[in-house]
Image 1 (cartoon, rainbow, N blue to C red):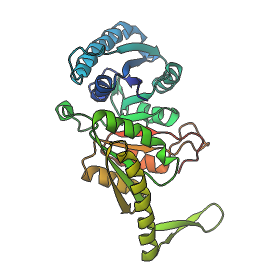
Image 2 (image 1 turned 60 degrees about the horizontal axis):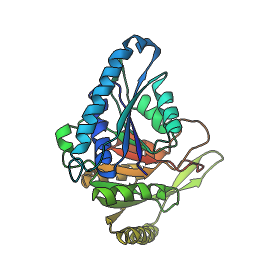
Image 3 (image 1 turned 90 degrees about the vertical axis):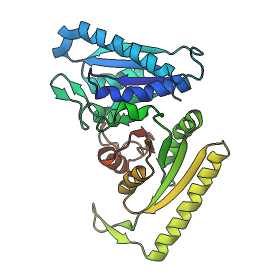
Length: 303
């Protein structure tokens, strides 16, 4: 599930905050890491410098991964690099498909020439265009010394009861099992139900308190069932039921439990544009403070 990991780099320290996550997976799970640098046409004259940089990062990533081995030298660490030409987002997505990449780990912003990889540019386009799982690492405020304890020990997994949202469970489960982490399952009960008012528009009809309590009970039963199935596999897991706006409650609980990672489904594609993402995932992506693992559910309408 995490056999081949791609990490795009643009030559900046900000982009390199993604590396500790790939290093831990390589060291503990035996994943192969592929470091990718994309040169646009205006940068072709600096190709040799880019080659030296990416080779330096390969050596550094191998060193970083080795500290996660149970015994020094008990397994070969595989890290390779490639330099691609073209538009960064397009080339990253296409290369991931060509190589059968299992996970793309990318910083939410970095520095590329005179342009930033801001959320809404390269990283944002990659997560919206690819059908492969993407881990978005927020560069702002992260310091390498904070990652020494491990990067993914506490994982928050939002679920809404649908099979589409459950697409992320195997990914979170493997991380928790292999990295000896803890999962927190979350179901958010909305305070109101959308109803169609006039064609093309919806309104919110608040639930009564009795209806909210019933929904909370149902949500708790659902999460308990999922949690018990994970516990049977010796996964450490707990669950929470909240009432409110889904995106807001995910962000809030992630901060409260000091989650290292939020793992959630994007609920698939809207069918309107290649760059589509579910609204809840959008809110967590743009408003959260925690690294985010997004797993798509192809063929399902985004919510």
